[in-house]
Image (cartoon, rainbow, N blue to C red; front, side, top):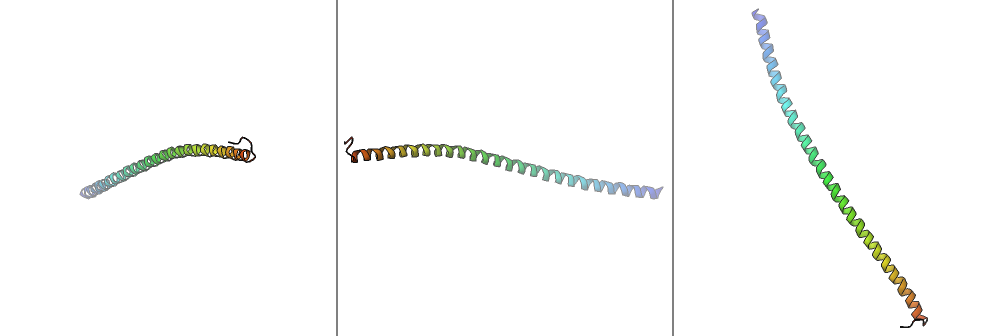
Length: 96
């Protein structure tokens, strides 16, 4: 009976040590997981913010492009008008 108790006590002590080791590992893994999740969320949020900023910048550039195209068209019209007017003046029509 004594032999069984020594084996049982040793087995229980070994299981308690193993359990403590497993609890420490679980705590460490949980902390690492939480840190990884936090890092992922920060990265995701910064990426989303950067994408939003880029969309804003793209829209501003589209507006600038549209304004520049309108200015180019206006200048082309002015050049056409002046070219037409120059020809008329040279031919003696509508002399100013």
